[in-house]
Image (cartoon, rainbow, N blue to C red; front, side):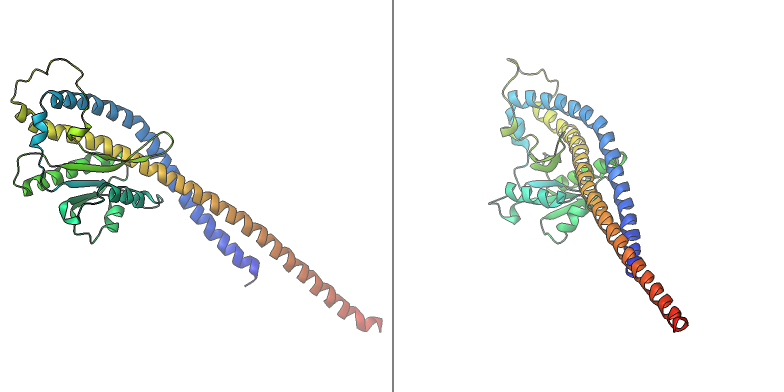
Length: 286
């Protein structure tokens, strides 16, 4: 097989890969655009609920004492699919910083996202894994399963009080995403009082706290799940865009090389024809 034909086959393969990566890049862009419309609304809802929680805990700090101070549970939000660069590796590095100095037996893990779970497959700290969403429409069923998993973890403690839960996740930004460590209901995270008088409650404060926990946690997980999925798609778009650019450069270089080899082959063919013509003419000239 001639060299330019070998290059043709390689060019065909590279063009197919470029097409696949380009489709994945466009898919990631479409998901990012959808989430851009959804995420601000979810963040406003969470801000409103967070204000209520802040007001409550400012005047009823005993509510935070109801949180289970036993073995903490870390909820890690990774990616369900791959081809998003070091998305999961960076999350694990940030998590390692958060638990630095703690023994591995002192906390448990709940992992969201199959690709992240693969990296922690044999980790004894994991008590549950939940497949993450791949598109915006899958967020709701994932959240239902995740809330069930959190409740199961609470039931295993034989406790009626909320877990000491820490969430490690990506927060999507306009330019880039960053990793956030969030501790719902943690006293250190609460702001100072906004009002001079406590809120009016028709329930016992501890009963209100228990009822509020699931509602507040679900709102947080909604925002976290949307934000993490958006950050994942932003990272995948960047990763695929860089890959497509590299492939296009390779295609251009191979095309030039193919043309060069083809020109050399044509030159060789012309030389063979000319030599053959000389051989044919030689006897008649004699």
